[in-house]
Amino acid sequence: MAGGYFSDPQCTRPGCGRPVVDAYLCRTCGDDLRVELERIIEFNLTDSHGEPLPGLAAELTTTLQRNDRVGGESVGWITYTRDNGIPYALHASDASDHLRAVLSTWIRELWETNGGEAVLGDFRCEDTLVGMAGWLLLRPSWMTLHVAAGELYADITEAIYRAWRAIDRAPARAYSGVCGAVTDELGECGQPLYSDPDHTWVVCRACGAEWNVHERRQWLLALADETPLTATRMAGLLTHAGISVTAAQIRSYGAHGRIDVVDRDDRGHPMYRISDVRQAIVDRYKVRPRMTPQSVVAG
Image (tube, rainbow, N blue to C red; front, top):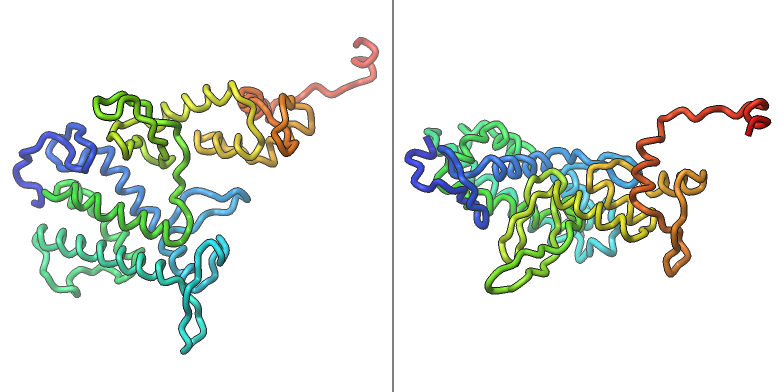
């Protein structure tokens, strides 16, 4: 087996250190790695219009064909092939090649470590990003039991994040407040945190402190309830907290008198209170009593 004797009782992913049992990656890091690999194949979130977001492999293909959804100016087209006239983004091509190289290198390493032949034909792995991600997802224990599992995690997640950056779309990370951990070197850490909604923990890049994503979401919701927000900002915060609502729905609640406008921003946009919007979401399926002539007279 890849693991053999487990001499280190802690997760070997850089910056983690959580306790492990007969593995080199803890369950949380293993789950996070699985999510990142799954998103190469399919992204299980929707955009602001409710449309499903494509996986990383599809996004890279779209970007390389200059059929991008984020706009040419932000992606930064810098050249094109004169032979076929198809423009492409060189940085996206480099990131795609880098990701393919990282995945294929670790696939070969895992195959050989677990008794496979060092012959490409014996991999039975489709030579695509989707194929390689699927191959790894079918062998989670090969990754977590490998003696260099921490290095594997760092290499793969760094390459995946680099690819997301190349297509000019962040991988669903959202603001989770300021760290606030107290350390001897930094005092109170003021590093902003950005967490993935499918991950359990977020690690501060400045001091290494770890925070539970769910608890940070709830803390942000409680903190934000003290400050009125526009529909757009509130929809983003609530969606990251796992509450499905759009800015249009929030504005509709306001237009129909289900929530109150408590303030306006510098541009005159109405601002609402989170507690009111959350209550309106809870009440949206409640049947309201119909007005009748008798009830009007009685009132």
